Length: 280
Ligand SMILES: C[S@@+](CC[C@H](N)C(=O)[O-])C[C@H]1O[C@@H](n2cnc3c(N)ncnc32)[C@H](O)[C@@H]1O
Image 1: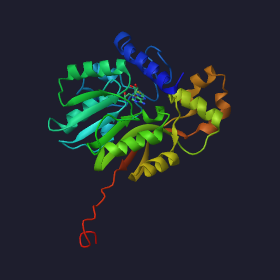
Image 2 (image 1 turned 60 degrees about the vertical axis):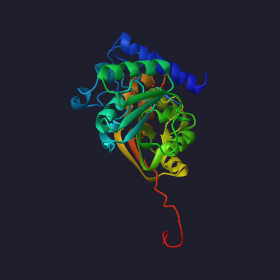
Image 3 (image 1 turned 90 degrees about the vertical axis):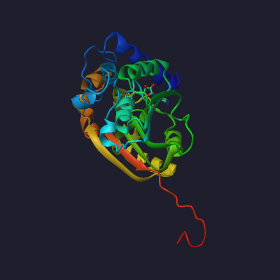
Image 4 (image 1 turned 90 degrees about the horizontal axis):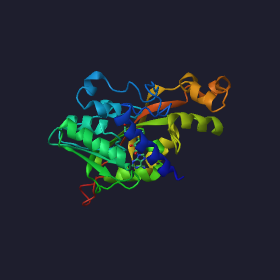
């Protein structure tokens, strides 16, 4: 199966589980009832959760809390790449207020239906959910102030294209403010693959220095990666044992390597050269 089809199927099923079991919980332990996932659980405080419908909180499948860390100002346009059940779009819409707008972009029909239902329950009308791929964003050049995303870019098999598209749609001076799973440094490939499957990174997480290099190649500057959660072998022990892996033996290779991080970057403002005097 193509990576994208596998991702769509997995998140389509997760969206449907929100309405049936009331908990999508599909990170470490897919479909486990009442599981406490070390990646997706306890990301939002009660102040944030109380602002939006319960179903939007239950549908949360991110690995961070981008709107808590991003600067969002009244009147700004925000775009959430891979918006899922819409939690970060609705929180953004509250922050930018009625003069601003929050877009969510997702490729999975079941997630879009869930997000639109959550928008309806929230009563917010400065929100729009778009169907499409983060590798080909259906918005014009220079039209967005802030791009957020929560644990989605690691799922893409063409991360360069995602970052190029993010750069294209951001206005000059626009901010990239994304939560994602990142690998710190080098990990043996077979260990890395097992951990990535545990995290749910079907396509593979980027190494921290590759993330920085790809953002720079896309044109961004002021790039920064701030760790928000560090995973240990204990977090993944049950999964690894299930895969027939001796968790104790690989612990030293995993320790502190797999993290959730908040990734910031800025699209620079290029000063147009209008004549000999104005460029000096
Ligand atoms: C891990 S969930 C995160 C959802 C949401 N950001 C959250 O925090 O709850 C990933 C979401 O990204 C969407 N997605 C994954 N790859 C995508 C792609 N290439 N283009 C558009 N959407 C994608 C999936 O359909 C799913 O809804």
